[in-house]
Image (cartoon, rainbow, N blue to C red; front, side, top):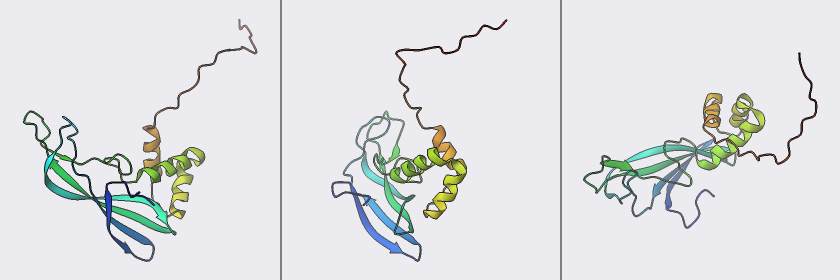
Amino acid sequence: MIFSTSEKFKVVSIDRNADLANIYVKSLQKKCPCPNCLEPGYGVHSYYIRKIKDLPAFGNRVIIYLRARKFCCRELECPVKVFTERFTDHFVSSKRFTSRAQTLLLKMLIEAGAKPTERLSLNMSLTVSDTTLLRWLKVQPMPIMKVPIVLGIDDCTEQS
């Protein structure tokens, strides 16, 4: 299940075709802070639909259509006049995959490589290119390495 009962999303409808499930979702957030000045926005300016790929369900591709709102900023000095509501858990800004789908694909990428993950993702009903996978890998933070306490040198030879 992608949403728990405590989250701020409501599934409006679900369309099912032969190999595709379209899930239409809307936000139930009461207010949304401006990303610049952090003041809560007022009044809905407009709406737009985000198309986000999710993990497959029963062998079918799943696409979530999220109806996101745009708000007006209250602060007169704020340079941002209209902003889009942000979601932290499942739908990261400007991403076309859910967080859980991207996490799974990144794990596969690290284990298998870009081309094999691209081929395997097709079998999983997720379509992603190898260049997209490599771009995701490039922006991942480097793992923190432990500093060795004892360092030994095995072969020490002098060159002349």
